[in-house]
Length: 114
Length: 109
Image 1 (cartoon, one colour):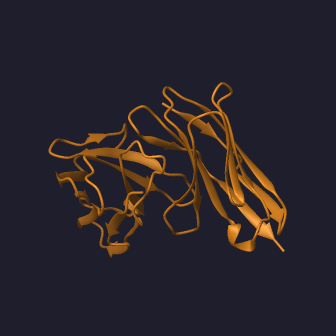
Image 2: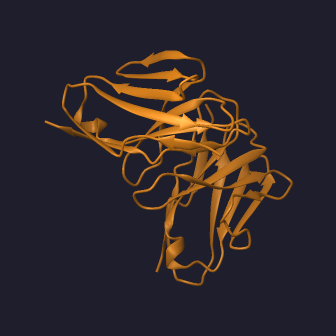
């Protein structure tokens, strides 16, 4: 199955600053990456679909200008939370698109905005 | 979109069997996944079903009935380390996963 590396594992930032989260596909080329977030005691919700070489598509209710996604290569997708606020504190996690019988996730990034 | 329902909580005794049910209504179906998630960690893949029937993997088994929009995850010989949240997820034709709210399983001695 796919090996996905996500960095950082956790980050604390001040309100108003930006945070970049990286998601790397280590053993195969991912043309598409899905970004999810999970608020405490809730399930994972799809935020956006990252497409290599083109614009990301965002789910309803997710601000594209706040959550900037870049997928410049087949092995790296990044999510930048701009002007972070405490309500953006969440668990962010990525997974590559695929027809595989197993869907693997990165380790996740715990973001805390203070 | 997808509508996925699973119980919020279940409690069982060590060594027992627990069955977590999941029902779904989908606009497209391309497989059903079960994940285990411990607090503060990423989900860990447990099982995948795309055809009707039972898939067995050691102490864990998963069943799917596509006509009924129904799946269950069976955990046998429960161990304390099995205390976790179990997530049912349905994949659509675009390979997007939609998750249920998760079932918190508590295993007691």
